[in-house]
Image (cartoon, rainbow, N blue to C red):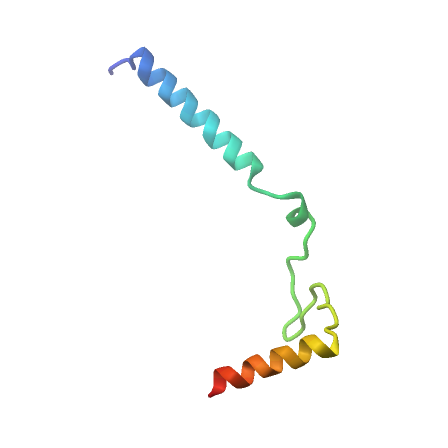
Length: 68
């Protein structure tokens, strides 16, 4: 069995520390209590904002341009 050099031990320690930091910070607070079990066919997320008449007109016009 070979012993690691000082540089090897430092590299291994840094790799383990970096892995722990990434692993422990991977879950954002916003995802911590989100619903996992979903009902089939139903969206249970946040509702979309209501678009005003001018925005709807612009979107429809843009859609017409893309169809042509």
